[in-house]
Structure formats: structure tokens, C-alpha cells
Length: 413
Image (tube, rainbow, N blue to C red; front, side, top):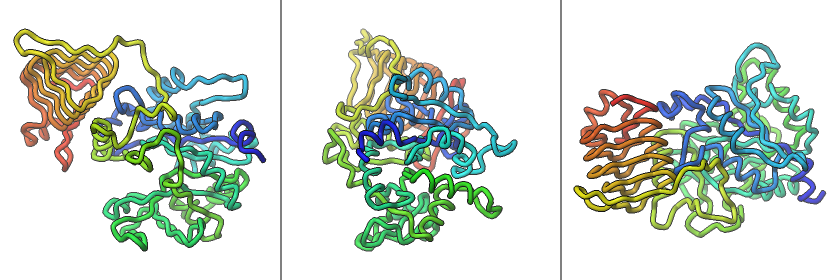
């Protein structure tokens, strides 16, 4: 069957966007994790959706659950496609079709929404996470899945061995078949040729549709199951010999550079989220937002352009290695290695370094912001300091072990 016919008629994409995101607190205190802002004007979910849409897979359901209002609004404002060819991105809240309960896990989320698969009659189903930063052409993964005859194919990537316990770890044989799988093991098995790394699941899957329906239905009947796609569904598929791996580094993406090829970050913690933002401000970005051959789509509001001003008292604005979104105004301030989201303002004599300012953050004259994430609507008073005295910051705000200060949305300083 031709690939172009599959992309238009025979594939359904399911994006899992129902997790609480506890490790990203306080950024997830009032919003779903996939709705967390990123990179100036994006949301985390925009990356998974852009990959699917760019790849030609335009029948997409987004399964939501916790604190989903801002995510639902973003999807309705942004992800509208022509319906002439049956294209859509739609939010599907927890419907409790299997009883009055929330999703018990990612596999249960699919099980509770099997009506979506039965209504669409796809041959294949993508199941993607909603909170990773990367570019990928899913069509190439689907092509391998079809060629191998697998029931499920898992996207895999090497990760540092010290971080591997946070992922499902894959043991690959001489072919693409997965020989072993362990979900978040305490002692992850390193790659045979590189003991510093392990082979991790990216949390992106493609299933043959009939196999997915059978797997999650069987899983729903097991009382001792955690109802997790990785720990339960993939583990049993490996035991049956029907699970294969797709190597992310084999993905040949239009417009990719040698530096950003194979880039993928699971931004599940404040540390990883912060580091992914800082990746954007490198002179030669580790993750390149400017690849017009594979754009990341989002809702760009009609805000005015960025404006840099000189101040009579403080002199001209100084901006180095920074990302500034629409509506940002910097007046006689110093910005270095930082990401400023829409409509944030920094006044004269202030310094912002190694930091992320969300929408409508205002930084007063002479304030100092270092290694911080400031959520929406926070007003920093003149001469206020953040990230200078971490002990004082920790008395009021979240401070990570790495010294990143996080101030929640609309906090009063």
C-alpha cells in the first residue's frame, strides 16, 4: 500500500497529554504539562503535533485529563486544519467509558478511548507523548514498522547511563527486534559498544491497530498490571517477540544540521526543561528552531515586534545569546543567555542572565535575575534580586539542586 495513501486514510495518531507533570511543579501548578510554554511562544505539545502534521499524519486525537483548560484553549486556537480531506486535531477529555475513574496509566488511557480507533478504522496507530522537544519524521518509522511486520515499533535513542533509570531501556539484537526491555530499571544495561550510554525508549510508538486493541484490552483485565504502555504493554510484546525498535538516528529529516541531528529531550524535570531552553540560545543552536523545512507550528498572537531601547540614565540595551518573542521591550537593560516570552518587559539597569521569563513578566529597574524561570504575570520590583542569594530564595520559592530558582504564575514579590 502506497505511503501517501496511508498518511491520508489509514493512520490515526494518539497524543497522550493527560499526565500531572509533578516533577515540573510549580510550572504545572495550574496547567497541564504539555501546555507549559517553551522557546518564546510555543507550548510543549506543539513539537509532537508538528512532527505528526509535517509527516502527513493529520488525524490526531489528544487525550487530556489534569488541568487541561489552557491546553484545550491552545489546541482550539492553534490546531485547525482543513476538514475537506478529513484532517483534524481534537482534544478528548477523560470520558470514563470504562467506569467512573481517571486513567490508571497510559495503556488505560488508550483502552478507555478504544471507541476512537473503532470509529476511524485505521490500519496503524501512532501513540506519541506530548512533552518532548525534538524533530522527527514519523513516516520513516512507520515504513520500517510495515517492512518488519512488527505489531509495535518503539522509537529508541541512546541516553547517558546516569540518566537511564528514568526511561524504558531497550536491549536490541542484531536486527531491529527488541530482545529485552526494562521500564525505569535501577541498574540500566549499557550499550555493548559504549558503557557510558543506554538505549532508551523515546515514548513514541507505532502499533498495528488490531494488535493495539488486543494488547490494551488484555491488559485491562489484569489486576496486577500498572496499565502502562512501557512497563506493561511493551514488556509483554517483547516477550512475545513482536516488538521492534526504530533508531531515531536513522531519521533523515529535511533541513537538519549535523549539530542538531538526533536531538531529543524529555523535559520532565525542571533541570531538563531549563537545559532545553538554554540549548536554544547557543550561537549555533543545539536545537534549531529556524529549520523552515520542518517548522514547529504554534499560535503566534498579533503582538507588536520586539523593541530594544536606550535609556538616558542606563544607556542602550545589551542583548547577547538570547531569544526574544513578539511584544518584548528591553529598555537600557542587559540580557544574556535567556529566553523572553511574549510581552515581557525589562527596565533600565536590570540584568537577566541564564533565565526564562514567561509571558507578561515585568522586571523593574536595577533588578538582577540569574538562573531562574519566572512564570506568567510576575512583576519583579526595582532592585529585587533572584538567584543571587539562593538560601533566601529557597525560603519563598522552589530552588533546585542545580540552583535554578522557579517562581510560579502571578506570584506576588
